[in-house]
Figure 1: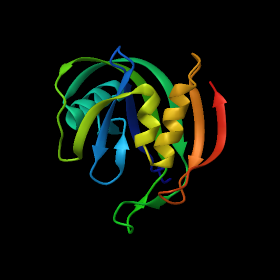
Figure 2 (figure 1 turned 90 degrees about the horizontal axis):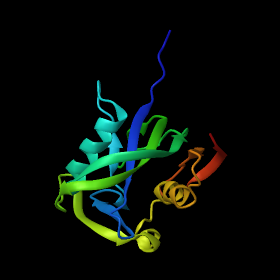
Figure 3 (figure 1 turned 60 degrees about the vertical axis):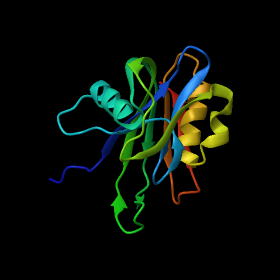
Figure 4 (figure 1 turned 135 degrees about the vertical axis):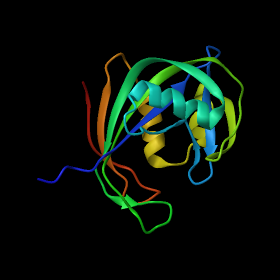
Length: 162
């Protein structure tokens, strides 16, 4: 038997209480809300807290789950050679509890952006789709399956509340 290969990742929509959302500018993918892959032996919440702090310098508490997203297409990594397998991503709302804006090996900038201006900066279609799911959050967790056949496309295959 062969085990399936999935990347498990998390994203954090960090709300500062003044109508702003934390964004980071990545070296490869432009502006995004912070997050990343879960490491072996790490749980989702601890991994999210680690990723946000590493990428932005901001310490957070994790509030609630807002979305589960499956990118079921196999696509190329930034090197345009390496295949990236199916991903499952969990997006959470978070609150800042300390730290100061900073950058990392993965980011070149971090800033608080008014909630209504976030989509002016995010250009990656899959990240935009996930942020739009946050904007429409009504208390039920969004589940969405999509494919990203290229860096400029995001095709939604299934969307429902769970």
